[in-house]
Every structure is written in structure tokens, then in C-alpha cells.
Image 1: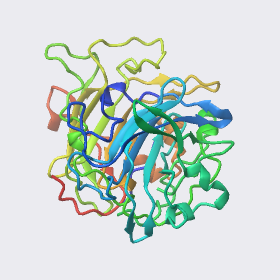
Image 2: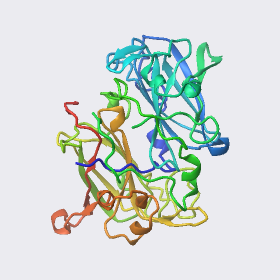
Image 3: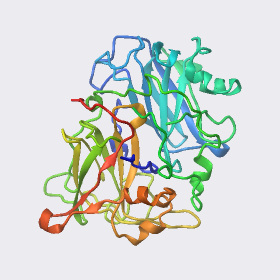
Length: 184
Length: 230
């Protein structure tokens, strides 16, 4: 059977769908105990379109391995979160630094996949964010991108927040320093 | 696992003429090919623990306070590319009210809000991959761009499949609506057969009864999955 076509998520993805802990990967729900594994960190950034104009109510979904580089092994850590951008185009996730692992494609550096949907985006886009301080040279996804663009996939250290390390990762849909995206 | 390219004509062609947002939001660079690995081939197996499900009735969220509009049931199956049911898939539905307005702070349309209609629900597909929502038929609305056009009545669907790559956000249209043929978003899909698969079928009223209209619509996710998710 042919897959159903993608269509834009549009401007009006309901706020009511997004729960208070939805952007928080470190706990399953707002009243759940956080995972005991790994270092909790903040990942913040903005989503902009051509000309650096902020995208409002863009929807971001993040998916990553746990601190030990495993998927689905820690019942307190689903590895998934969703966030929307505010009037300035800003989003935030709370998560743990993922572990690296080896799969059929090679040795993966600590990373998270982020898919972005929004008004004007007819298809979702998918990118990968890498965390600083790890060897990314050998990562097969990093290697799929020309050398000059690789820094655009690296989160940057930012000011600590409430004792947590914080990283910044801006997503530019189009224009100067456009974020590299990957095939779906 | 999605291991084949999208068949031709199924993906929207962008940017869309007459829809300036698509000119400024669509990446100029083509996406980079890369071999899907463990991250792409996986997804949270128990996402329903994070996303509460069981909201299947948008038309009467509080008992005795029905939304205004044409009552309808939309049901169908979530399938994979091999035609097998995707069991336990999270299905999100959202839509405008009967006047064509979303209950969202950033919808500034002049059409009235309905205090009894929030316009969203989330459920899981059953053991046959089946989903069903009771709702009201949404209204059409004008898109506030220079070369304005009217969006036909449509439902938004968001479906979580078993992998990062099977995640699907799409829209569903109603059969026979004259606005379908001039909708820039539906018409951004080049293949006529693919467009027709985005249009629901009306169930014979005699088989549905006298309470509501019935529509059926199947959604096919990318990939061929084993689907033992509980």
C-alpha cells in the first residue's frame, strides 16, 4: 500500500495536546519520579525562517537514547519529548545527555533526533543535534554532512540554569546558516 | 522499517504557489541522505504513558453540553505499507469548529468560537488498527494571505507509528467538497490517486443510523512493521 501523504501541521496545533511535562524527557509525566540515570540538562534554542524571523507555534519532537545509549531500557525514561515555540520562536527541552552506541551504521556519538513541524512546512523536517565534548568525527550521520556545515549540528554550551548545564541549538529552516536536515 | 523512498507523487511539492509561508519556511537545501540507524528505526514503545489517551468524543466533551455542528463519526484503520494493522498507535485529531475557527489563541479569525468545542482528541488504535472519533464537521475558512483562498473542511491527523521515520502528520478531506479542487495544500500533492486517498468516504447513512453521519478513512504509515505493541 502507498503511504498517506504528509500535510502541514498548520499554525493551530492545540496547546491542549501539550502537557506540563511534555518537553521534559527526564520524567514520563509531571507527577512521575525523574529517571535516576544520567546528567539532566536543558536544551534551548529558537526556530527561525528566512531572514531570521521567529516561527511561532512550531512543534518540535525530540527522540534520543538514554544515558547508557539504549532505547526503551529505562522505564523512567521514554526518550521522547515535545515542545512548541513561543512568540519569539523559542523552545526548551529538559533531558539527559544521551549515551553513544554502536549500531549497523557505525559508532554513534551522543545525539538526539529533532523533527520540526509548523505552518508553511508542508513536510516535517528532521535534524540531529550532537552534544559538545564528545568525539563526533566518526559519527556516520555527522559524516553525511559536508565538513563546513557540521558545526551547525552541534549544540553550544550556554549559561547554567538552576544548577543544570544548558545547551543552545538554533534551528534555521531556511536562509543564512540553514540547519542541515536529513531524509525521512 | 521505512527502507524505500517515498513513491513518486505522494509527497507535497514545495514551495506552493500563492502560499508565501512555504517560500520562507521550506529549506533551500535538499535533505541529506544517511543510512537510518537505531535512532531512526525506533520510537518510544510506551508513549501512551506520556500522552494521555481516551478522548474520542470531541462533540460532547462535557455531558449535556454538545458542540454546535453536524454530528459525525470518523473511523478507519492505521495500516503499514504491507496493509497490516498498526496496533496501539497514538492518533491525535484536531480541527476547526463548525464556523471554521480553531479554539487556539493565535487564530484571529472573526468567526465565532463555540464554548463547547475545543476541537482536539487523542486515542490509541485497537487490535485491528482501528480508530474512531465522534466530532462535528468542521467549517471552511479563508487563509489570510494576499491571494486568499478557502481551506475546505478538513481534519488534522497526527499518528505515532513504531519508528521515528513512520511518524505522520496529515490532513483528511470530505468527499465532494468543491473547495477540495482549489485547496493549495491538498493540491500540493501531485498524484491524483494520492490526493484521492486523503479524501474520506461517506458511509451509507442506512448503515450508520440516524444519530450522526459516518465517514471512513484509512491512514497508511511508512514501513512494514511487526506490530506486537501493547
